[in-house]
Image (cartoon, rainbow, N blue to C red; front, side):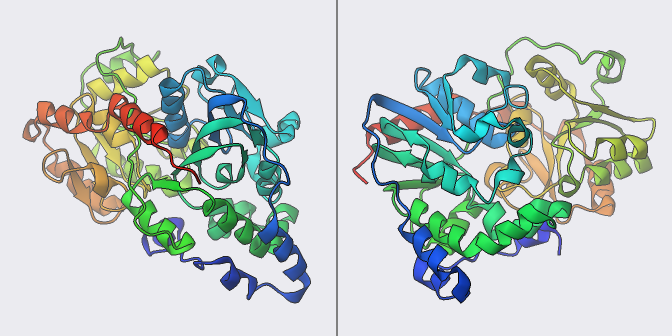
Length: 415
């Protein structure tokens, strides 16, 4: 079963209380499990700061990191606490922030390969002190377990994939000493994860599917949904991507903005555009890049490391965005919509939260070459109202996100 199938078939059905986990732990691990269940740093730090931001790690450029940037813009003087920080691997805007890391950050290999630290990251996280009266926490697995001095607002992108879908998360690296250790420690780590999730009064989900997932895993009811923002300012300066000026100037290409990973289905878009002779610009980086370059025909271009101004240019001049992987939320349709562009998307996951069928985009039921070919044939840019798309996307603006975030933080109750 593929990762997409697992994500769309109600995975993450974890036990709703730690006792259920404990019952399944082999006898040899029960002692470790009990320790994990009771594991709480003995002394909370004293609150010396008014507000702080916390995130799992800052080592890559993804949607979660963009949310942290929005949090940073909301509270520019707040330090950011994280386990690992790689300035070259993540967004350059973080260089303006005060970043405080765990001791693991001293190991350069882990900064570049955070998955190798998975078995110990949750426990290391518990020692990372956040001495603030209020903490704004962005988590996909362990930031909710930092040692907080005060109140916490937990913004959950998903219960831990590395824990509840560890084989699929690790992919082809699911064998070897680190994955084996992760599997051995999994029962104890689940106890730690439940403890971390249940010690905060305010826990929100970033999408409808995440709300359901949090309920399945943690047993939390009535979790609010708080959508992430898009951060593309369509009125800001733009510039063409060097070497692609001629390719993009005629405004007749489809666009994909994505990490180049197998489950992103970029290869399906390349094959469909090859078949139809349609122009396609792929913006992203990742291990699939060489494979995609070999697959690409004469109407396909692939670009990596583009600036924000170049990304805005690509959105502004494309025919439409293709978003054909499963995403829990998926920010790129909103980024394209800021420039009035429609999207052809996979009917699943977070795209159901952000796309109005027939008004801001069209859906394919499965991310196959055949269905994408039919959608590309049917797409007509004249059918879409750019002003309506921009108005719809404005509801997901960073300004609105920041306003709502500040309201949450100001009203934080005692845990």
